[in-house]
Every structure is written in C-alpha cells, then in structure tokens.
Image 1 (cartoon, one colour):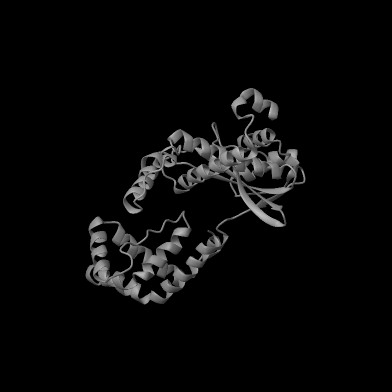
Image 2: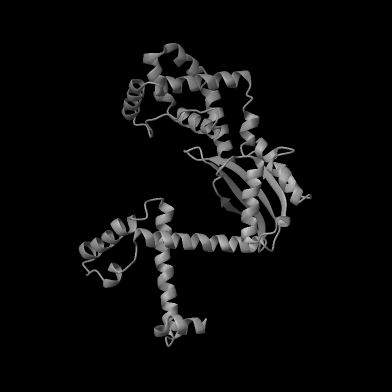
Length: 320
C-alpha cells in the first residue's frame, strides 16, 4: 500500500496518519447524508437542489451566521450520491457474503412481480452470528427469460459462484407452493437437491393465520359480507364517497375514508374492518339516508364486526 501511495499519489506520501483519519471521517459523514437520502426514497438530486439551499438559508436567516465555504463544497450531486449509495450497498453485501462463506444458513425464496411484469425472485438468508439469529435480504435480481425452476436455480447458482459461497452451506430451503419452486421434478428445490442432497425443504406460508381464518362460521361470514357490501356501496361511486367524507368531517371523525377489501391481499381485511368499525357511527348515519335495509343489517352485525376487526388486526401484526 505504501508503494502504491508513493507511485500513484506522491503528494500525499509524506502526510501523517491524522491527515488520512480526517479524510476518512469526512467521507463517513458525507456518506451518512447519502444514506439519509436513500432512506427517504427521494431523487438523488434532492441533496443539491434542496438540502444545501436549506442549510444555507438556516445559517443566514435563523442563526445569522455566514455560510461556510465547507458547506458550499459538500459534494451532493446526483452522481456522487448514487456512487456513495452503491459503495455502501456493496460494502453491506460483501460483509454478508463473507459471513455466509464460513457458516451454515437457511434460504428462503419468494418470487415477486414488478409493475412492468418483470419477475424478481427475492432471496433471504437466516443464520446465526455472534449468538444472534439474523435474517437478511441476499439477492433481488430480475429473471430475464422465464420463471421456471431451472432459471431461478441457475440465477442463484451463478451468484453463489461469483461470491464464492458454497452451496453445501445451505441446510434448509423455504419456498411457497408455486410449481416453479416446489415442483418435484423441475422445481427449484429439485435442482438444489441434485447439488445438496441433504437439504431440508420447508413449505412456508407467510399468512398462515389468515389462511386458517378464511373459513369463517356462517354468522361471521354473513356479518363480513354486510360490512364489505357497505364499504363497496360507499367507495364505488364518487358521489357517495364525497357525501360520506362530508359526514365524517361534520362528525369530527379522525378519518374520512374507508378502505377497500381485496380478496387476494389478506392483510387488507384487517385494515378494512378496523377502519370500518372506527367510523361505524358515520356509516350508520350514511345508510339511514341511502339504504335503510343495509343499515339494519350492519347495525345487527356490530358485535361481530368489532370481533373480526380486532381479530384480523392481530393477524396483521403477526404477519408484518
């Protein structure tokens, strides 16, 4: 390293340790700003377009201090912020891969889909480090061709080879019930077992409590239908939604909107019922003027709706 320094940067060869420590500390502080920008999810240009002008204005107008040259020189351009975010991400990835090379771990694969119909397998790992059980996202890389088990396995195997992580360190694999992952002959697990015969395959269900609770008693199912029908009648027409919002404001409610329930998104049931019961009085007022029959059905189901709202909200807490 000393030889590299003297040949590539001779002007810094005679600097003492404190000089390089100051450079390191400065880089760490600047990287923290980039990390905060990344956490907010805003455009990387926000640092140059908003943060620096705000800091300068606060110094001048609030603290009545001159803007220091150091603040003007803080590099927060789009490319700089992007580069630092990439550096931090690569550092985290390298540290994680370094741990996985020397320890056994379990793998979990969940195939997600982006808005443009791009398939994105999400790979999580769980392992023990320093007597603590850790779970980290290892890989999220788009599948270019198809979503077959062979393609998913080839993607993961290539990544493990690149990072020099032995496949034999995998002790268990958890997948959902999709044929591309759990298929006996052509699924991801089948290909993995050809490389690691002793791997333990587990079928995971992230919303298992909701699956059990999908089969309600006839009474609760009837009460749930009344609540969902009421929500749909209000939300399906902009006129009804506007009238309901006005009534919520008149009743000084904390919220002025109901949530729709989507059958394929089980977590929405808890949010839908919790909000519905929170606005129960206003819902009754609305249907007293627009649908007396449904109003009576909802009123008779109040206790059941309260019970299910509490139950499904607890399920949501278990699955978040």
